[in-house]
Length: 452
Image (tube, rainbow, N blue to C red; front, side):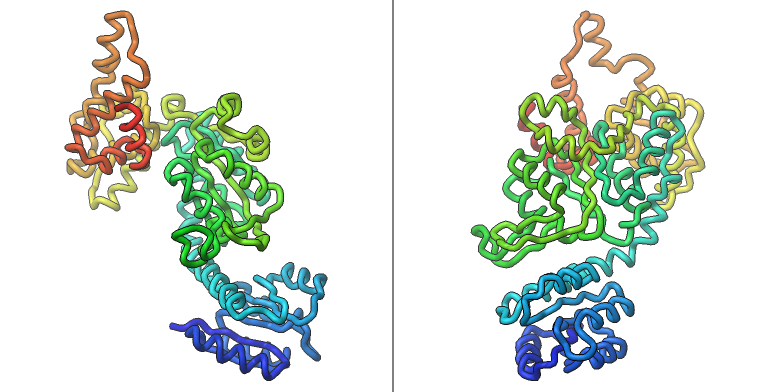
């Protein structure tokens, strides 16, 4: 169904020309030659977008904008004017106008602004459709936190969630649940009705990451055939989650720092400064102070992100959470896998509790899913668990042997052996292996290449 556009302007020639040009683009056009008619037409037809002249006789464009926003705050309004009255334009933006254009403007400029605005409106509609269910999934009281360290992390997150401008740095090993906590913060904040968008800085090639974040104009580089809206612009009024921030290239770190300081940026190949209202939550499994010393991370960006640090402990340091987490995961997979497990046996619980969980909660989830997918019973018994769990009564074989020889394997050799075992288990299927290991396939390819 074509998007509908209401044009409110007192110049007949302007109305005629814009109608003709925008109908060619496939839009359904409504025309109003006064502010009063514009408000009446909007209430009757509820168009997707309104194009409103700022300087109208009688009821002016500012009042039309106010009335439209009171009727439907999600409607996108673009202001147009032949007068360079910056104060009024700024007032319109503060009242919720998406953009403003000065007459005479180029038709291509108007078309691009309308297309961009409707794309963002579509995103917001999809977000609002799912917000309530997402809120239910990410209530803080649904996060398993029986241990003292995890309880402290959740309490800190709960306190800072309502502070909509405060940046947060979540640290913790891979698989501890950094994204889960970031989503909980977003969906328990005043930004919950706006997008939560994430980017994994370790999973996207350096050459593409800038375009993903900032977007680009047509012709900005060889393959840029059309304008692209970046994540920062799409997340306006919402939250951007920068996962694995330590892997962001240094030149891009400087640009992100500027966004944090100015809440504005330019698209690749663009000249216009784009203002956004976003909150940034960053996460990393690395020690950023060491990365700063090594010259891999900007110290000024670290201090700008580290306003409220939240450290999520590894699962081996929150043993009290293992069994409650397991029961919660079983409950979820009973629904997803159509199983009817009621819990776990005492010996299985002991084995899970004694295991060190190098892959943290992600590894626990993967093992429970695998166990429930392969078995159907009333409870998970120790016989259902994989050998890496059940053999943890003492050190694993590779470590026990090295202890007898009074020398330890390096972490790199241990990681290499573990990846080999998982690849053997999956028959060489790297996507499946990455899922079991709890890492992104790109990260697995990188590790395989590094470990030869």
